[in-house]
Structures are given as C-alpha cells and as structure tokens.
Image 1 (cartoon, helix red, strand yellow):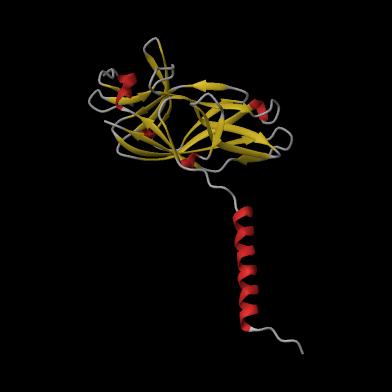
Image 2 (cartoon, helix red, strand yellow; image 1 turned 180 degrees about the vertical axis):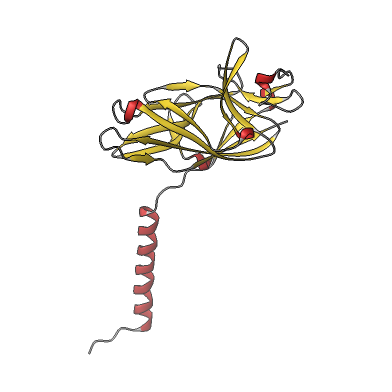
Length: 220
C-alpha cells in the first residue's frame, strides 16, 4: 500500500485550493462599478428585444460612447441647476412642485444637465402587436412627487405622475426615441421603478422586462 506524508498531502491540498480559487476568479462575472451621471445624453429607459427576451436597462451616452448599464449601478444627478422657482400656479401645472418650486431635467438639451429620455429603437418592427409596448411606472419612493411630462406652448401633457396614484401606464411606439421633462417636487433621493411589457405579434403572448429601479439624486 502506498502512503502519502502529511506534508505532501498538505502541499497537494494547497495546490488544489489555489487552482479552485483561480478558476472561480476567472469564471465569475465582472461587477460594474457604481457610477453617477451628471450631464449629457442618457436613455433612462432603454428597451430592447433580442433572442426572445424583452429587456430594460439604461443607455449611457454622456461621454460620447454608448454604454449599456444596469440601472442598479447608476445614480442620475439632478443638480441645483435643475431647480426652477416659477412653476405656474394654473390648474394644468398643479402636478408639479411645491410652492412654485421644482427640479426638472428638461426635454431639451441644456448644458450642465442630463438630457434624459427613453428609447425603443432596439425593438425590431413587427415584434409586438401594433408595434407598441407599455411602459409602466409601478413605484416611487422619495421625499415628494415624481412626474414625467412634455410641454408645448406652455401647456403640459403629463405622462407619469406619482401624485395621482400608481401604477401609471403609457403606450409607446417601438423603434422610437423620445425626450421628456423629468420632474421632482423636492430635493432628496428618489427610487423610481419601471417595467415594460408587450404582446408578441406572432403568438399573442405577453412578455415583460420585469421591474427595474432607477435612482435620482436631487440637490437643493
């Protein structure tokens, strides 16, 4: 019968353990470092359909190169420069702000602020019934209200508003790229949760991205 000394066995175990650790290190998925985005173009809601899956992430183009990011790894900055103190007091604007004050990432490109929108350009035509998907705001936590709206000729069209009850659903064309105003009623940290769903034209099956939560940091 052959024998193995304790010292030899110990060296063998050590080599095997080291090899296992190395394999785990190589095989394990890389974790993206958290980032804060402060200015430039970003598709907060980036919707894609590929290989039978509908997905929702964040497309970061703030540095001129498109980078897909997990929303959980991103903080979207809403700085003091986004603060407005002259929110109209007329009825159409009552969804926005408190005491005439709000923070808004605008639907037009303004230097020093995020130019925030959404994209369904990654969804091929004909994938979903009527070439539409449904974007749903399912939850908001934060110090006050959150809204998304467009404005033309001084009149707002509210797309999402946490102040009138959730969920809020919006039918969106596929193959589209849209910008809107992202409004916050007070300074603080907001956690905003969206999901996207659609009915497959080929089967009638409803598919969903599941819920994704986005973080906005609003500075007074």
